[in-house]
Image 1 (cartoon, rainbow, N blue to C red):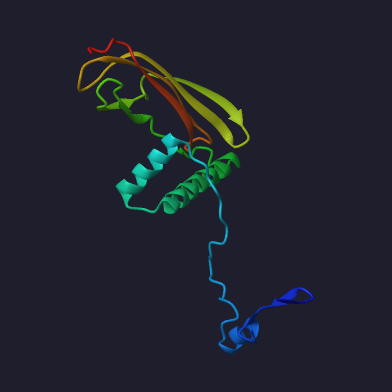
Image 2: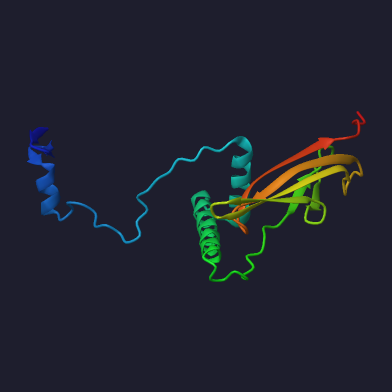
Length: 180
Protein backbone atom coordinates (compact mmCIF):
# COMPACT_ATOMS: atom_id res chain seq x y z
CA UNK A 1 0.00 0.00 0.00
CA UNK A 2 1.15 3.48 -0.77
CA UNK A 3 0.02 6.47 1.24
CA UNK A 4 -0.98 9.50 -0.89
CA UNK A 5 -2.17 11.95 1.76
CA UNK A 6 -5.36 10.48 3.20
CA UNK A 7 -5.95 8.06 0.35
CA UNK A 8 -4.60 4.54 0.19
CA UNK A 9 -4.22 2.72 -3.08
CA UNK A 10 -4.04 -1.04 -2.98
CA UNK A 11 -2.26 -2.82 -5.78
CA UNK A 12 -3.50 -6.19 -6.98
CA UNK A 13 -1.45 -7.87 -9.65
CA UNK A 14 0.11 -4.56 -10.57
CA UNK A 15 -3.15 -2.58 -10.90
CA UNK A 16 -4.46 -0.17 -8.28
CA UNK A 17 -7.74 -1.52 -6.81
CA UNK A 18 -9.34 1.93 -6.92
CA UNK A 19 -8.70 2.20 -10.67
CA UNK A 20 -10.11 -1.28 -11.28
CA UNK A 21 -13.28 -0.48 -9.35
CA UNK A 22 -13.74 2.84 -11.15
CA UNK A 23 -13.29 1.10 -14.50
CA UNK A 24 -15.93 -1.44 -13.51
CA UNK A 25 -18.17 1.33 -12.12
CA UNK A 26 -18.03 -0.32 -8.71
CA UNK A 27 -16.36 2.46 -6.75
CA UNK A 28 -18.95 2.08 -4.02
CA UNK A 29 -22.46 0.98 -3.37
CA UNK A 30 -24.99 3.79 -3.76
CA UNK A 31 -26.65 4.72 -0.48
CA UNK A 32 -30.08 3.21 0.14
CA UNK A 33 -32.96 5.26 1.45
CA UNK A 34 -33.75 4.40 5.05
CA UNK A 35 -30.60 2.35 5.40
CA UNK A 36 -29.92 0.69 8.70
CA UNK A 37 -26.36 1.77 9.35
CA UNK A 38 -26.81 2.09 13.10
CA UNK A 39 -26.01 -0.98 15.15
CA UNK A 40 -26.60 -1.43 18.85
CA UNK A 41 -25.44 -4.27 21.02
CA UNK A 42 -27.96 -5.35 23.59
CA UNK A 43 -26.95 -7.63 26.44
CA UNK A 44 -29.68 -9.97 27.61
CA UNK A 45 -29.77 -12.17 30.68
CA UNK A 46 -30.89 -15.80 30.33
CA UNK A 47 -34.52 -15.02 31.11
CA UNK A 48 -34.69 -12.16 28.58
CA UNK A 49 -33.01 -14.37 25.97
CA UNK A 50 -35.62 -17.12 26.51
CA UNK A 51 -38.40 -14.52 26.18
CA UNK A 52 -36.93 -13.15 22.95
CA UNK A 53 -36.47 -16.66 21.52
CA UNK A 54 -40.04 -17.59 22.47
CA UNK A 55 -41.51 -14.45 20.86
CA UNK A 56 -39.41 -15.01 17.74
CA UNK A 57 -40.53 -18.64 17.47
CA UNK A 58 -44.20 -17.89 18.11
CA UNK A 59 -44.42 -14.92 15.73
CA UNK A 60 -41.97 -16.12 13.07
CA UNK A 61 -40.24 -12.73 13.22
CA UNK A 62 -36.52 -12.08 13.31
CA UNK A 63 -35.25 -10.99 16.72
CA UNK A 64 -34.11 -7.67 15.28
CA UNK A 65 -37.63 -7.07 13.95
CA UNK A 66 -39.06 -7.70 17.42
CA UNK A 67 -36.77 -5.01 18.83
CA UNK A 68 -37.76 -2.59 16.02
CA UNK A 69 -41.48 -3.20 16.60
CA UNK A 70 -41.11 -2.69 20.34
CA UNK A 71 -39.16 0.52 19.80
CA UNK A 72 -41.81 1.90 17.45
CA UNK A 73 -44.60 0.96 19.87
CA UNK A 74 -42.81 2.67 22.75
CA UNK A 75 -42.09 5.74 20.58
CA UNK A 76 -45.79 6.06 19.67
CA UNK A 77 -46.83 5.84 23.32
CA UNK A 78 -44.33 8.54 24.29
CA UNK A 79 -45.64 10.82 21.51
CA UNK A 80 -49.22 10.35 22.72
CA UNK A 81 -48.11 11.26 26.24
CA UNK A 82 -46.40 14.43 24.92
CA UNK A 83 -49.62 15.56 23.25
CA UNK A 84 -51.65 14.87 26.39
CA UNK A 85 -49.19 16.85 28.51
CA UNK A 86 -49.52 19.81 26.17
CA UNK A 87 -53.18 19.89 27.34
CA UNK A 88 -54.43 19.68 23.79
CA UNK A 89 -56.31 16.48 24.56
CA UNK A 90 -56.55 16.47 28.35
CA UNK A 91 -59.55 14.11 28.28
CA UNK A 92 -57.92 11.66 25.88
CA UNK A 93 -57.77 8.26 27.59
CA UNK A 94 -54.53 6.48 26.74
CA UNK A 95 -55.65 3.27 28.39
CA UNK A 96 -53.32 1.33 30.55
CA UNK A 97 -51.10 -1.68 30.09
CA UNK A 98 -52.55 -5.11 30.63
CA UNK A 99 -52.00 -6.61 34.05
CA UNK A 100 -52.78 -10.10 32.77
CA UNK A 101 -49.89 -12.52 33.06
CA UNK A 102 -49.27 -16.22 32.66
CA UNK A 103 -47.60 -17.56 35.78
CA UNK A 104 -45.93 -20.98 35.71
CA UNK A 105 -46.63 -23.18 38.71
CA UNK A 106 -43.44 -23.81 40.72
CA UNK A 107 -44.63 -27.39 41.42
CA UNK A 108 -45.88 -28.78 38.10
CA UNK A 109 -44.92 -26.05 35.61
CA UNK A 110 -48.49 -25.53 34.35
CA UNK A 111 -49.44 -22.13 32.95
CA UNK A 112 -51.87 -20.22 35.20
CA UNK A 113 -53.83 -17.21 33.98
CA UNK A 114 -53.54 -14.34 36.47
CA UNK A 115 -55.14 -10.91 36.18
CA UNK A 116 -53.69 -8.54 38.76
CA UNK A 117 -56.09 -5.72 37.78
CA UNK A 118 -58.64 -6.31 40.52
CA UNK A 119 -56.34 -7.23 43.38
CA UNK A 120 -53.51 -4.72 43.39
CA UNK A 121 -52.57 -1.47 45.07
CA UNK A 122 -51.90 1.34 42.62
CA UNK A 123 -49.46 4.17 43.28
CA UNK A 124 -48.79 7.25 41.16
CA UNK A 125 -45.60 9.30 40.94
CA UNK A 126 -45.36 12.45 38.82
CA UNK A 127 -42.36 12.40 36.47
CA UNK A 128 -41.17 14.34 33.42
CA UNK A 129 -43.42 12.52 30.92
CA UNK A 130 -46.44 12.37 33.20
CA UNK A 131 -47.43 9.78 35.76
CA UNK A 132 -45.49 6.66 36.54
CA UNK A 133 -48.05 4.09 37.66
CA UNK A 134 -46.99 1.11 39.75
CA UNK A 135 -49.31 -1.82 40.41
CA UNK A 136 -48.27 -3.74 43.54
CA UNK A 137 -49.76 -7.14 44.34
CA UNK A 138 -49.32 -9.69 47.09
CA UNK A 139 -51.23 -12.90 46.51
CA UNK A 140 -50.32 -14.97 49.55
CA UNK A 141 -52.05 -18.13 48.37
CA UNK A 142 -52.93 -18.81 44.76
CA UNK A 143 -54.08 -22.29 43.75
CA UNK A 144 -52.59 -23.87 40.63
CA UNK A 145 -55.21 -24.66 37.99
CA UNK A 146 -53.60 -28.06 37.33
CA UNK A 147 -52.12 -29.59 40.49
CA UNK A 148 -54.13 -27.58 43.05
CA UNK A 149 -51.10 -26.70 45.16
CA UNK A 150 -50.77 -23.26 46.67
CA UNK A 151 -48.17 -20.70 45.65
CA UNK A 152 -47.38 -17.14 46.65
CA UNK A 153 -47.29 -14.50 43.88
CA UNK A 154 -45.90 -11.09 44.81
CA UNK A 155 -44.42 -8.16 42.95
CA UNK A 156 -45.23 -5.15 40.86
CA UNK A 157 -45.80 -4.02 37.30
CA UNK A 158 -44.93 -0.47 36.28
CA UNK A 159 -46.01 1.70 33.36
CA UNK A 160 -44.33 4.94 32.40
CA UNK A 161 -45.45 7.06 30.74
CA UNK A 162 -49.10 6.13 31.23
CA UNK A 163 -50.04 3.48 28.69
CA UNK A 164 -46.46 2.28 28.08
CA UNK A 165 -44.99 -0.81 29.74
CA UNK A 166 -41.88 0.09 31.76
CA UNK A 167 -40.83 -2.91 33.86
CA UNK A 168 -42.04 -5.60 36.21
CA UNK A 169 -40.80 -7.86 38.97
CA UNK A 170 -42.96 -10.90 39.75
CA UNK A 171 -41.90 -13.49 42.31
CA UNK A 172 -43.51 -16.92 42.57
CA UNK A 173 -42.76 -19.15 45.55
CA UNK A 174 -43.91 -22.53 46.78
CA UNK A 175 -46.05 -22.56 49.93
CA UNK A 176 -46.56 -26.29 50.31
CA UNK A 177 -43.88 -28.94 50.74
CA UNK A 178 -43.17 -31.14 47.71
CA UNK A 179 -44.53 -34.69 47.88
CA UNK A 180 -41.28 -36.43 46.97
